[in-house]
Image 1 (spheres, rainbow, N blue to C red):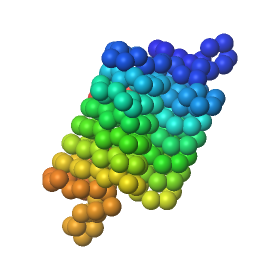
Image 2 (spheres, one colour):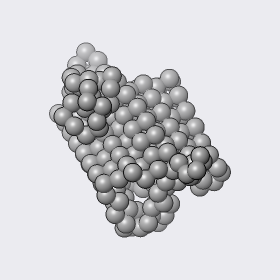
Image 3 (cartoon, one colour):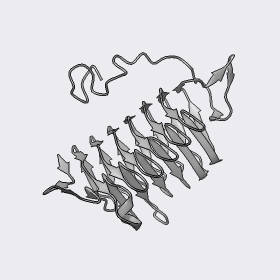
Image 4 (tube, rainbow, N blue to C red):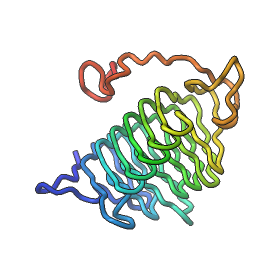
Length: 239
């Protein structure tokens, strides 16, 4: 476990990313980015001008005054893009955009990840993309919330993510787009399960582009009210 809790105080960032570094198998918690500038974002992991590989990690219970309570990616002018795989992004908060992950000019590859119970005061409860077009594969977004737009995902300013084999369910937004909100961006979906993606059998174009195979069918989570399931252990069969 890597914790930002140090002698009764909290670090701005629990982990600071390095380009092409590997972070594997850690729980990252207790970050509190309540400063200014770069110190108000990325409380769990802050990747400024760096593109690490993060895998098999739990990023949980981090809070940022600005963007990206869990993770902040900023990769402008970098050829290498970050990777996030087999991770849990849970119960992170931001006072502005992107409760779970903020991706700014960083078209990450996100695979086999769970985003749940993340909260943003503004757009993008779980994930907000700004000038970013990530590839999102085999992920689940559930129970995230936004105080404005995009309970699960917000795509802003030339952001064109592609989501494949992904579930978006039971996310909420105060203003628009419980699951997905697009503002000068557009998502593409293939073989996804998205709550309320159709009305009378017609695709909701506000979500983005329907690349086929998408359904509006309850994923039947075993225990939707509890992230860790009945055994209270994240990553086991009953989650």
